[in-house]
Length: 326
Image (cartoon, rainbow, N blue to C red; front, side, top):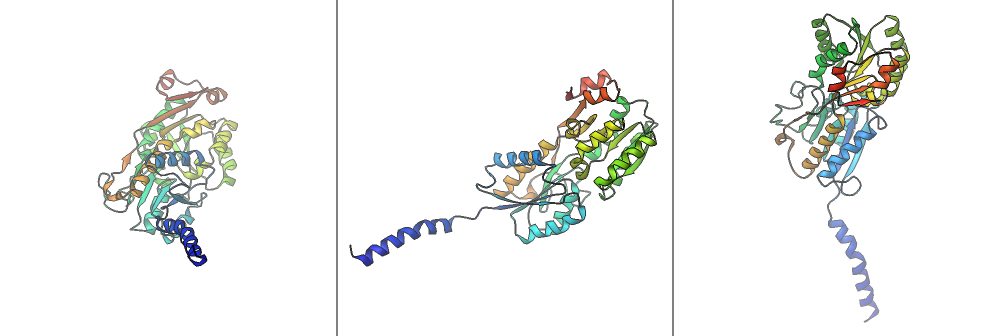
């Protein structure tokens, strides 16, 4: 073989793998928008990836994920959502509450959105209806808004002498007012009083719990909010330090040392969000995917914390608990 022919053959062989790689489609990119922090939801992200993997997508192998975190600063979410839209991601995942979903919906009417919300997605303007979303968004509705009366009833059963209950809410979250109203109505029906305590930053937590103890509230309900979820360890510690029976809507609160939690399973919701995200990447349309309603509710009681607070948990509550932490 002549030298010139040999060089041409070698050059063509070297270029062939490059040509094959150039023909391979680029990995789809998921834009992930969360109102909280990566540390606060690390275990939940594992569940999201698990759901994604059930549809055949593995991060770093055949899909890329661009994460954007609100870190509790809700006012940054619209700009973070707009950044993901500018990057032309294939789908936006909005978790950490309805505030992320609303920000994503406000940023795009065309890029598919998969949300996780505890409020009515129809009322929020995210979808036309639960069965037929009709637009570019679908996801999971955790029904936490409907659990307000139940949480008041459980706390009253656990601490029947508590005539005054404090409600810890984040004034920076526009949904706090609705949560308070629902729980106040339930408390009023039971002959109880409920008063709001506003906390919008970690620096305010110590003073808030000191005030709750000073005003002798018999119990505390914590609002569903990404900020409070991220502060669950501190919330549990402060409640114990000030001898305040406290309830949160997430089992992770009880696992962190909180007294009691009742609500839907966040882990299950994040997994379902992952499944829907994968199905959309495979070509399905959000408009055709009904909003899933969470059906897994969890009552978790931390018996160790109850003993430290000097509380005797009624046998009826123990019998209905999904988990008792001892």
